[in-house]
Amino acid sequence: MYIRRIVLLLLATCLLAGCGYNGIQSRDEGVKAAWSEVVNQYQRRADLVPNLVNTVKGYAQHEEEIFIKVAEARASVGKITLSTDDLTDETKMKQFQAAQGELSGALSRLMAVSENYPNLKADGLFQNLQAQLEGTENRIAVARNRYVTAVQDYNTFVRSFPQNLTAKMFGYGTKANFSVENEKAISTAPTVDFNKPAPVPAPAKP
Figure (cartoon, rainbow, N blue to C red):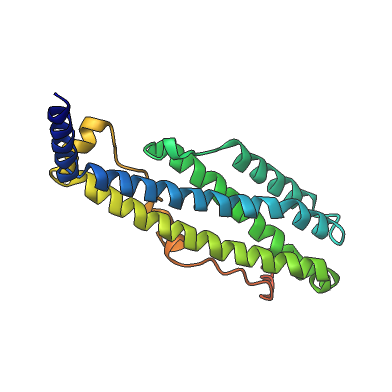
């Protein structure tokens, strides 16, 4: 009886391996690890925001509207979380992307303010925060690229025969990926150009 159980266990193991079960497990863990890094880098950026805003406020107290937008965007990012268990939910992924996009836009507008305040641009703390933000944006781009690659590999694998049958049997669905409109941002590290002159507003029409 004992030997029979061992034989059945070995047989079941071989069948699962042949049907791609182990491959699904491995790729699933790869996706989770890649997503965790994406979240870590976005959190690193969010953690920079308070110091960045306070530094800008020291020189640009009258830019209250921008400060409010940044605060609102950061609060929105904090409310929308996407765990590794939610990675099959396309709607949640889009909400997560939208919130991060709002923060990206708000930070871009905040950094543009520095062009109007030479003393702010020369501030050592501000320069250090600029460098940290630029480095973080690059790390975000790298992490997103790795996640995209991991998801593509996983989704292709679980959709292919015979592992698609195994995936269905054990409840492994396809993972949500970054949407097409963000493809450029995913494949290219964002450029944070702090020395680019601010655009000159067009003269008002009479």
